[in-house]
Image 1: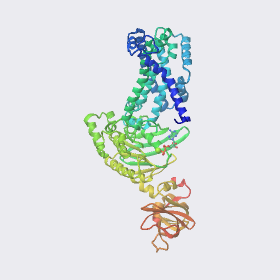
Image 2: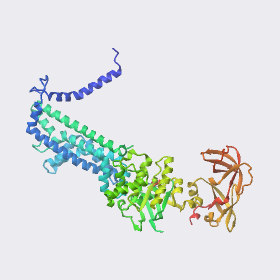
Image 3: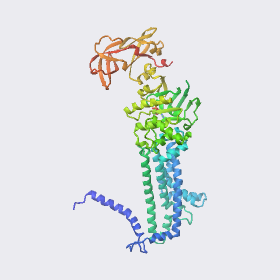
Image 4: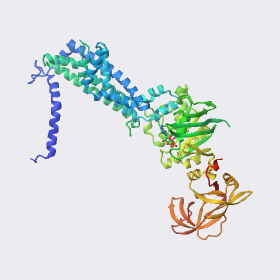
Length: 271
Length: 366
Ligand SMILES: Nc1ncnc2c1ncn2[C@@H]1O[C@H](COP(=O)(O)OP(=O)(O)O)[C@@H](O)[C@H]1O
Ligand SMILES: [Mg+2]
């Protein structure tokens, strides 16, 4: 055998780091198919029974519905505001533009727990009780920067010529937006929406602070269940979450790549 | 003739910088007008004000007799062709060309017919179902033209539409564009920094400098009788020689301009001097002929010269000559072998091809 070189060590180290990151996730997925009562090794056989139990657990179903609704609404609102904000930032000049631009991105930079506490204190100060719309608002605030960043980057690559050409041909600014600008930035808009949905769907920090009593999302539900015991159901739920939060963006990306390929590279990224 | 576009004292300022100063211009119905000038002189800014893409700071713009200052671009009925084509990448060629028809209530078969006619006019009838990226640059520029003219605009605006094309294609497109403009009789405002394009295509050339109009006229007038050194140098290569008027006859002005003496310039080319004695003699490089040394008297003005530099360009050659203590440029057609560097030659020109400017700039503008 050859003497191990520096490169071999780097390779081994890399493999080790990846194992450390992904092995626990792999274990969760593996155990969710375990036939045993206990969510631990050794596995006693292959079974889908925990997924079955998930489907009949009312609390989990309700949490899923809440999370899905919250995620979808967050995605819609965040994307709408994000697209409009990006248009303002990229296409118009106005006083205080850089400040507003920084403020829009700020929620990414501030630690989430600080943001969560701040919003909570603010609501208490204003004497507003916690509610689903306020939870939604919180999610919109911290998914917005992702949408703005993605959409802005794309919009900068869409030359102003296209819009000017459309208007010279008789399209009003609004018609121009829907017939030219929006189709050209659509891949970024979809990516932004997916980001917003995924981030909202598996957020726990902010949600724990903001959710009204009795409302659980999937992550807070898991958190609550963990306090009692580590049941194999949680493994199954984790597997479902992984499939959703990893699979959805991947699917979205694949679709968008198709769309982009059809549109051609011209409108694409800045040269 | 009726004016399609009128600019009255238009000014454009960006902050404290004035990009266009008090510009007034009449553009005749059906004519091809070119804004010509070096980069940064305000051509694009002027065009964009006419288009309504930017506001004027001061002044009025009228299109077809109607003041349009407050009319947004999408209500001005203009055709614009951009330097980078700006074809919608997510739409087919047919959809691109039909884009403006929809806003004019032209739909269905009528729209299809007009798209087909427009594509035929630009000689790309087969391309309708393709996407812009599947076309070459020249083809895309033709489609951009088709998209602009299919809506029958009141004015066609073109901002350096040929400069993104390579040299051969540019000349083809130039001929093509002029053919289409003639055929449709559409009022056209063309922006370029290329004097060749301007001379070849225009009914009228507006030479701009630093946001102001330097000279307006038909191509030949601007070329033959430049009203300033700037125009003389911008349109082709010109030798500018300081000199004095030594005599005036009914039909012309006689000047001495080192190294030449007794140059009789016809009156119609000396009009700008207004009786000044200190003048500048303008001698186009193409009008200065280089002949073998000591060649027999061929008329006109001649002086012995030495070839300093030879810049061979195929069908023509540019010489830098030393005549006395002056360095002059001559651009000649090549018949056989060009002269060599260091060779002694005769530089000759016909004084009827010269023109005069007053030595003090400003008098010419009086
Ligand atoms: N939006 C703008 N803001 C500030 N200055 C501008 C703007 N647009 C053009 N300019 C300036 O105005 C001058 C004329 O520009 P332009 O009309 O584009 O020149 P041209 O088309 O003749 O090359 C240039 O000096 C340019 O820098
Ligand atoms: Mg320009």
